[in-house]
Length: 167
Image (cartoon, rainbow, N blue to C red; front, top):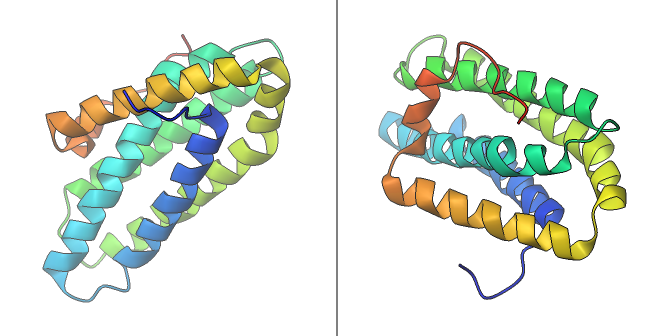
C-alpha cells in the first residue's frame, strides 16, 4: 500500500503518458537486445495497466451511461493483447516486428485518447474523489502484485480468445 492517495483517473492518465513514452523508445533502438528489453518493459506496463482497468476500474464505473464505452474498451484491450502476444513470439529484428509494433503503438494511443475524452469525464461526474482514490489505490496494489510475480506480459498469450467480460 502506498502512503499517498492515488486518484484513479489521474493514475491511469499518468500511465498512458508513461506507456506512450516507453513505446516511442522501442523502434528507434537499433540494438536488438536493447530493443527487446524496452519492448519487454512496455509489454509488462501495458499488461498491468490493462489488467487493472479490466479487474478494478471498469467494473467500478459500470453504469448505463458508460457500459457502451466500456464494452468498446474491452474489445480494444483484446486487440492490444493479440498484437502483444504476436510480438512476444517474434524477435525484435524480424522483418514484420516493426510494422506490427507500429500498429500496437497506434492502437494504444487511440485507446488512451478515447478513454481520456469519453470515459474519464463521465467517471468524474459519476464518482466522487474519495471513491476514485480508493480505486486508484486498489489498481496500484494489483499492479504491484503482478509486477512482483514477474513478466506479466507473458499472461497475455492466454487472453486472446475473447474480450474480458464486463464484471
